[in-house]
Image (cartoon, rainbow, N blue to C red):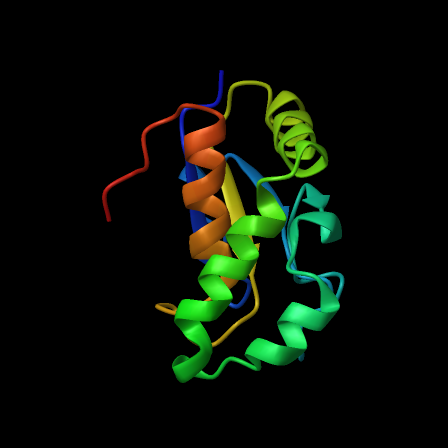
Amino acid sequence: MVKHVQIRRAYEAPDAGDGFRVFVDRLWPRGLSKEDFKFDLWCKDLAPSPALRTWFGHKVEHWEGFQENYQQELRTPEQRKLMREVAEQADGATITLVYGAKDTQHNHALILADEMNRVLKTKPRKS
């Protein structure tokens, strides 16, 4: 069983406590080379749909609607199955969702981590 799901920006150096690092954006993070960016799995399918990502546009005024719509996307049987498959690949380790957004308070990884902690019945790590 996974210990917990946490998040980290792609531009931050990996930490020893990251465990299984899952990149959860559809697009490669700007300015990072494939040699420098470390992750164990790129799971584009857990990222928001292209239409939702475009609509949100990282505008804080869209945050509430984005949260609701992204949660709906994540609550399908297919997405829950994918979350469990990621947990199986983590093999009991902490899962760190890695994202490229600049805003650490308004990004899809926050929502995804909460949803995965709920689905996998883990306890979110206190920051």
